[in-house]
Amino acid sequence: MKKRGKRGLFIKAKKGDEILLENVIFLILNLAFFSFVIWFLLRQGSGAIILEQSYAKNIVLLIDSAKPTTEITLNMEDAFDLAEENGIDRKDIVKITGNLVSVKLSKNGGYAYSFFNEADVTAYPDVYSEKNYIIKINSYLK
Amino acid sequence: MNNSFFNNKRGGEKYLSVYWFLVLVLVAGGVIGMVTVYYGSPYDIREIEGTVLINKIADCVSYEGRIDKSFISNGIFYPANEQDFLKACHLNLSSTEWTEQQYYFQVDFYKLSDLTKSVLNISSGNKNYISFCALQKQGITRTLPTCVEKSFYSLDDLGNEYIIKILTAVRKSEKNVKI
Image 1 (cartoon, rainbow over the protein chains, first blue to last red):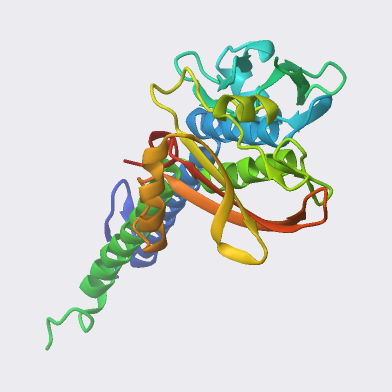
Image 2: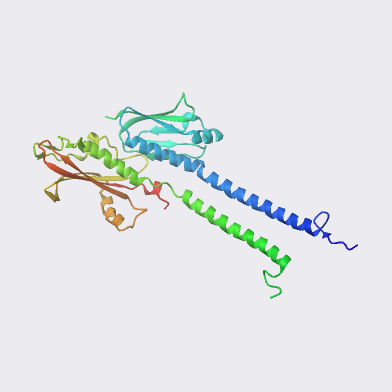
């Protein structure tokens, strides 16, 4: 009887087996490739640099638009998760010095942006809801 | 045509797999490139900042449709000192973050009967930015300061009608645009 299969990678494979193996490899490569692309896209939007900038600018705009005695509750769950991963304490994430807001989510990172509203502002993590930060506009300076 | 790309059944399939993979690499490369460019440029909030500054100045100059008496009272105009105006409106245009001022604003009061001549003018900040506002109207922007202009109607204590025009310019280019 004439043998129809030929020598494959590991065993003597039939022609059908070979086609199956090729397709499986092609499928695995495609999956690996698309997994990398999806991982890359997801990582881009949630990186420390992007989040630091986004939160700093958000907080600045909120402070500029607010009047004294306003208390702003800001959901920063994703920032808390990232800061925890990078070993940053919650109370050190947002710092307000003079009219400069700094957001730090990684050891070597940090982003600062200034506001024009001449007010005394304090920021601290919320005690009751562990995913929020409180930004309090106490009074105008002078 | 026997050895052509698609007529060769087994060889053609192999080439087709490589070709497909090449297409995927190109598409993914394009997506990655676009995402990198998108997230690589900072968020530009200067227009919003300029609008918020206008709202804050408008609240300070006129309240409930009436011009504050410290600017116009009994038909008399009181030109405000720059520092006094900043203090009265609770504005701080300087910051330790920048060596030079990154803001400019200009408030002009016009009588409704004559919109060509400003009867009262208040301005503060970096005056160099005014010239860039004209360029912005021509569409030459991005790295230049962003200008926003708004106007509103208000009355003085005698019921005289005014149009108040507020122009703001915010620079902060390094933090808002990829230079």
